[in-house]
Every structure is written in C-alpha cells, then in structure tokens.
Length: 458
Image (cartoon, rainbow, N blue to C red):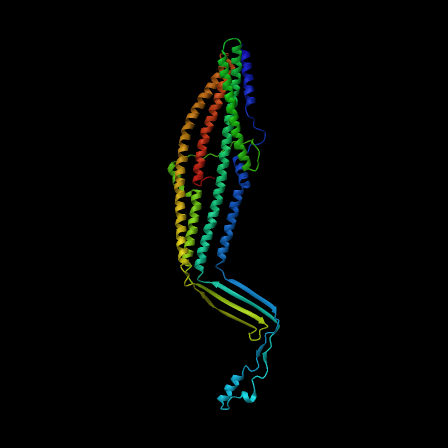
C-alpha cells in the first residue's frame, strides 16, 4: 500500500507540473533590453528629441543676431525712354529777363525771344540701367535685447532637454512596472495551477470515498466548487498576465504578442529615509522643466524692459551704377543710424507688465510642482514602509510553508498521509512564494516611484 501511494503521489506531482505555465526555450527578455526597445520605438521620445534639436537651432539663431549683417543689392533694367537731362524751351526766359534787368538793359526776351528757343538736352542718359550695392549693418544698442533673447533660447533648450529626459524616465518607469507586474502574475498563475492540481486530486479522493459511502454528496460538491473557483482564479491571473504582456509588447515594437519570455532581472535599489527623498524634491523632473520655463520668462521680462532702448546701428554702404547721368558711377556712405519709437500708446508698458505676470505664473507653477512632488514622495515612501512590513510577514509565512511541505512529503513517503496532503502543501508553498514576491515587488515599485519622483532613476 505504501508503494501504491508513493507512485500515486509522484503521478499527481507530474500532473501539477504539467499544469504550470512553461517558459519557452527562447532567451528571456531583460529589463534593459525592454527599456532600450521601448525608447527606440516611442514616438514620444522621438518628438522630444526633435524638440531638443529645434531648440538648439533656436539658440544658434539667437546667437547669430549679435553679428553684423552684409546685404548685397543688384538691379538691371531697360527704360522705355532714355533718362536724359533736358531744359525745356522757354524755361529760362524769366532768368534771362532778370539778368538783363540787373545789367540795366531791361527784359531781353522781347528782343531775343524765349530762352532757350527749343528743348535743350544737357546730358543724354542710357536706355539700360545697372546698379549694384553692398551694405554693412552692425547692431549696437540692440545687443542687450539680443542677449536677453539668447538667454531665453538657452532656457528653452534646457527645458526641451529636461522634457526629453522626463519622457525617457516615464517610458522606463512604465516598462519596469509592466515587467514587474508580469513576473508577479506568472508567479500567481503557477500557484493557482498547483492549487487546481491539488483540488483535482482531492476531488478524485472525495469521489472514491463517496463511492464507498464514506462521504456525503455535499462534501464532494464542496470540493468541486473549490476546484472551479481555483480554475477561475487561474484564468484571471492568466488574463492579467496577458494584458500586461500585450502592453509591454506594444511598447517594445511587438504588437499583438501576449506571451513574452522574461529573464526576470530587476535592479536592486536600496531603500532610503524620507528625509533623503524630500531633500531631492527640487530635482523632480516636472519641477526641473518648470524651473527652465521660469528662466525663460525672466529673460522675456528683461527683453520687454529693454525694448525702450533706442535702436542704434553702425552702417556702411557702397554702390556702383551705370545709366544715371547725374549720379557718380560709384560712391559710399558710413555712419550711425538711430531709430527711437518715442510714443506707442502704452504698447511697451503693457508688454512689460504682461512679461511680469508670465514670470510670476512660471514661478508659481514651479513651486506647485515641487509641493506636489513632496506629497507624492511621502505617499510612495509610506508604501515602501508597509511593503517592508509585508516582506517580513510573508517571509515568515514562506518559511512555515516550506517546513510544512517538507513534513507533508515525508508523511506521504512513510504512508501516513494521502498524496493529496503533499500536493496541498506544495500549493500552499507556491501561494506563499507568490505573496512574498508580491511584497518584494510592492517595495520595488515604491522605490522605483521615489527614484522617478526625484530624478534619480538610472
């Protein structure tokens, strides 16, 4: 009888092993590989990088405003009529009469007639006109506003860079949470599979006992209900695992895959004190982006005040022309140009006041984000503390279950208990392992959240 029980027990253990989900032969996906693939596939990360590139070009453009500009002008054309310099007939008659009067001769036009008597061409122009010029402009007083614009562009670049880092941080956090969730659901699924195998064996024993009249119908129905409930729990765990796997697969560029082999590696992050995390609330990624926006608003406020400064520009120009008879063939000019908008109906004052409001708005938003980060840090740290307590309790439970499973196996081998006793102990052991893993992952997620809130996730 002892050998029969032993072989029956071994057969049931083999049945339980077949009920467990089997990992494929494919090498498991590591967390670092999943993060790398997700970052490469993410359109959000690509957009964030393009924004950084755009902001970098904005800095280059703002810096180039400091330097002089050289403009070249060219013109070539053909006139319908030549641009001649002419004196019309009679246009100088009054001048001739005035000269005669001054000389004591009286008006001369009655004697000589109109002067000139016909149209007189003094200079004959060309039908073709050619003009070329070059000018040099160097901003002087505008350098203050240009400097403020450059500071604003640099702040915008910093904000875009921080936004890119925040996007990458969100992707990494999301991938790691999904990764940990899949590991937990697989552990729960294995525990539920072992529970189903145990209850299947228990049902067989109950039906045999019912056949010989040792058990009533209600006892058999109770075992059947327990097995059905365990099967439902296993289906729920499998559904949750498939759901998390679909989300992770979509992030890494494998849409539609609901079963990914995972390596199971998770980084170790030692827990720290609450004061450690609160001291780093100012490093919160969203708060860091808001701080860069504050610097951008401050530069805009300076530029609004500097708009009252008149524009002073150093310039020099030279030209070459052909076709205009009265103009020299070449020439040039150099000097300083002043442009000062004295009255604008209050437009600049309104812009200055608006820039002050924008700066205060940015500062308030920065402070709000820091306060929110501190609140979320306290909540995440509390989760970490409770997870630590759960780890201690589930570790104790796991040790008890390991000992109970060992004793149950020994009792079955000695013929003191039915094989279902060992199967039940093994199912309880796997359930304890799943609960212990869940507690460890709860603390892992809490520490992950703390690292993400303080920008220390690497």
